[in-house]
Length: 399
Ligand SMILES: Cc1cc2nc3c(=O)[nH]c(=O)nc-3n(C[C@H](O)[C@H](O)[C@H](O)COP(=O)(O)OP(=O)(O)OC[C@H]3O[C@@H](n4cnc5c(N)ncnc54)[C@H](O)[C@@H]3O)c2cc1C
Figure: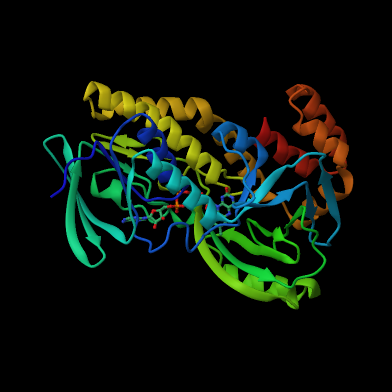
């Protein structure tokens, strides 16, 4: 039994690595465990990260892991009618996530964190204000204990449940994702992401093409978790009908589940904090979770550092993390959950109408922080007079 650690982090994805980094920076002895053989692999991700996250998380894009600058996005309705948004500077980057996570891991280890791969946590037990974890470490069972455990174990989250906090998702609250990293494809410029909507294309979701470099891209799909046909079936059909993709080769296959249905209200218990996908901290509109998971990791780490200082690992003390996260991010994501509910209700005709009638200037105005809510509603209202059903839906979900 090893108990020299102040905090044990289970799961070394973006959430867990952010916690390891911040806690080690503050001089706290951290052990990070992951069941994978190699950090960041296999990726379950399209690897897109918006520009604002770099600033917020204190990251400088490094060509080793921020492999493709993105300057625009094209949104396609079912008829393939599209709207394109371009910007002067970068909108974001497509990452090589394996390299990104290794970079985060190297940084955490250099600050003192101890990281172990092929370490699957199979049980957790709370006793006398401490948690003991049973770990299958490269085929050998070991135990580790600490007064606080961080469950950053992603969508399959079991650690919190072992310690009495339910984290599972209902089928209706998840999207099912499937993706090919493809090369030798044509027709999709490297600086632009492409999103394809429609109930026959991707029910309750969309198809994405996120370029990683010239002629290579993550081509994937997210659909509602309760759909009868699989995400793979929809994606294969889409690729077959796009000659620029159909001629390509697949160099990697990825699949994963995305928790888009809302967030855990309570993310703590005595001696336990939950972060990232395990706490369902994902943008419900597009399913992005890298930045949100890392930000939550930083917020959690600040509260944990205080808990360590005071020696108070109670649910009551740790619940400051709930408050701080909801204030910083959760409440605004709740609004985005309503946008998601609206998008789920749109028919293919609604998508067509929106793509044809809303201009790039409208989108820029509507997304601008300078325009007040009322003016935005009036602008939308004018656009939607010919489609009162759609206007009603918008009012219901966006007011
Ligand atoms: C198809 C798809 C596409 C996506 N595309 C994007 C995108 O383009 N941009 C974006 O921002 N987000 C995207 N996401 C979401 C993003 O990948 C997640 O939100 C993000 O990875 C969450 O980070 P995390 O650290 O919480 O969880 P994860 O990255 O899942 O990390 C959890 C870690 O815990 C480990 N683990 C689990 N159980 C145990 C255990 N018992 N013992 C030890 N280790 C354990 C796992 O091995 C894993 O390494 C996508 C998701 C999917 C499925």
